[in-house]
Image 1 (cartoon, each protein chain N blue to C red):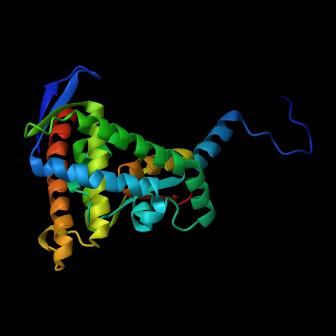
Image 2 (image 1 turned 30 degrees about the horizontal axis):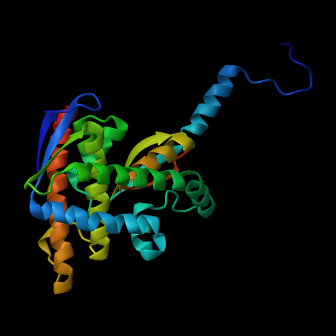
Image 3 (image 1 turned 90 degrees about the vertical axis):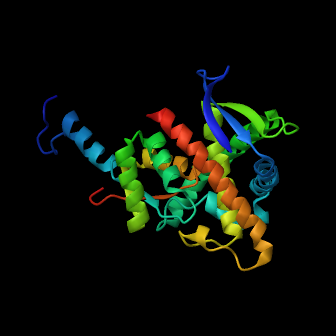
Length: 102
Length: 170
């Protein structure tokens, strides 16, 4: 497509994709500490929902336990909300928040 | 509760045999209908509903309303469906012969985990539990002791179920 004089250049498809991708993956899924959910249960849920290895699931569970929260995924908003809904379904306290630069 | 892996006719053939003693069976039959009543009539315990359906957006009321509008009904229906399935499977257990024995498919066992956890969350809220080491701190009020014991029993059941489900993951 020829570029018309006096107008802004049309971004290439590649640029559009990159911009969209960086915007879309701007939502963090956070899991919060809870006094009732068992540690083993939280590890099980992380493995089940996110396909984490046992080691990675245990790392995030311990982060929740010791620091009060853990970032378990960064996704586009729709996917992040879906993760949060499923975590709520398992009885975990989860929220989403904009990632820095997201 | 005793749980062991076994073959079942449904699902992918992988399943679990559950053995429930009299107390465990009675607890499930007692707590389960109370939880279902709250889900069907949210006004009966706003705090349980708020815990089972917590906010997804803490700092954005509009986004939270949208989340609730889009996901709230799905989450409620998923929970009610899990409870209906739980009730059906529990009815398969023969409580005349103790320990009550029943077989669950992988999917049914996973539903049990959901429902047992929801029951634990409900009891913990009723007991006002806020600390991680709640198991070491029995209630002072005698009226709360039965709920505390039920919570301990459900915790034990959940622990056994997780151990076996986890082994089948690896």
